[in-house]
Every structure is written in structure tokens, then in C-alpha cells.
Length: 267
Image 1 (cartoon, rainbow, N blue to C red):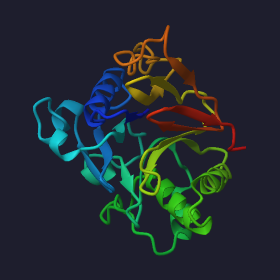
Image 2 (cartoon, rainbow, N blue to C red):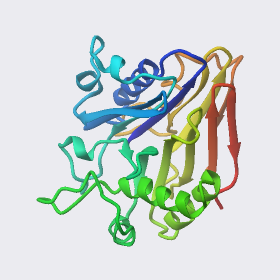
Image 3 (cartoon, rainbow, N blue to C red):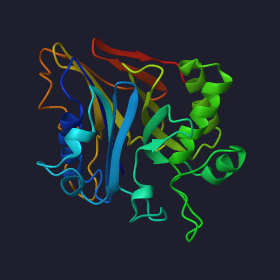
Image 4 (tube, one colour):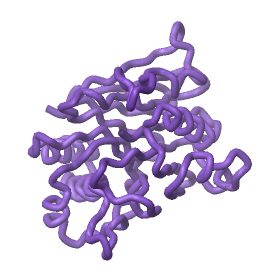
């Protein structure tokens, strides 16, 4: 069970906040195998990811904060399913689209990922391992979204509807994902899609002079541990004063520095 998070600030760097949320989620067993962060700064996407713990990849005194600049970002900690490929940086999130415009993190499983891959002609998969003849199933989402944005002539919300419709054609698919798009550099999109186990959720929140934030939320813990509810965003949000929402399924939230807007649009 992976953990995802995102942040759009009012001016402060996003990466340190993302790193703190990832570290909290890792403690609640939402990830242990790998971690990654992506940010957007001056029209460019920067990202770092690797196999290992959050502390190993993003040490407190590390140089990552000098590389991951910007006020908009997303993060991921990975807890792979038993059959998923592991142990290499190529399997870690986030994943970049072929055109370099979209970067995405995902929590869930795309069971028909090989069939989707076969239909995405001309796309290169960075997580594909020739020796294993396998790749991270999550990566199909960013390429599928890239394809649909092209067909929708840049209309991100329309492309998102189509992407989620295609993913939902397999009833076993589970998807909760977030992404940044270079054409909309001040936003983070968060999609609460399908989860037949009713486990994967996110909480989104907004605080004045801080911005908008989201993180994974669970009603039940993993392997006997306490469930993670609001813990990842607690250091940044005053729940008695600030706006927050646990997203329903089939919903997309759009985060900006001025607030969060959720749309029931994926059915």
C-alpha cells in the first residue's frame, strides 16, 4: 500500500513539506521500498527517486533541496504488491510522460497494464526491465493521460475523464493518483478513482499563507499498525480553523495556492 502527497504553496519551497509528509507516511507502513519527489520550477520539472527509505534518499542535510526547487510538487512512498518488480530506481515513482509535460504518482494496481501498454504505440516506458520483461504497472497511467490530452487538444479535465473511464473498464483496477502538468504550472491534480477494497483515500486541505496540500488517508492500519488519517498533514493544518476534505471516489481535486476545488466528474 503506497502513500502519495502533494503541495502547492504560497511562496515557500514545496520539497521540504513533501519530504516530511513522506517520512510520516513511511512510518505508518505506506511505503518502505522506494520514494520520490517531483517539483516544478521556472517551467521545468525536476524529480529525484530511488530504492530505499525516505531518510536514505532525502537525508535531512542532503542536496536534494537545492535540486527540487519550486512551490508546486508531488511525492510518493512505495509499498509494492507481491508480484511487482522491486529494488531498482526505475521502478520508483514518480513517472514522466514521453513529452516531458506530465509527472505522476499512483497508489493502487492496474491489473491490465500490459494490455494498455500494447495499445500505447510509440511510448517508451522508463520502468521497463528487459531482464525481468516487466515494468511498473503505474507507469501506464501517465502515458495514457498524455495520449488523451493530445486527443483532447490540451483539455486536461476532458482527458482526465477519458483516462479514468478507460482505467475503469477493468473492474479490478484500483487507482488513486496525482500529477503536475507543465501547461498548468500552478496546479496539482488529485484523482480519487476506483478502489473496490475501499482502502485508498486522500485528504485535501487549505490554509491561508500556506497553500493547499493533500496526503494519503486510511481508515484501517497495515499489518497491525495504527491507521494513518490526518497525521501527514497535521504539522501544517489547524483542523478547527482550516478547510479540509476527505475525497469521495470518482472525484478529482484541483489544488492551487488559493484553495482546493473538488469535482464529481469521473463517472
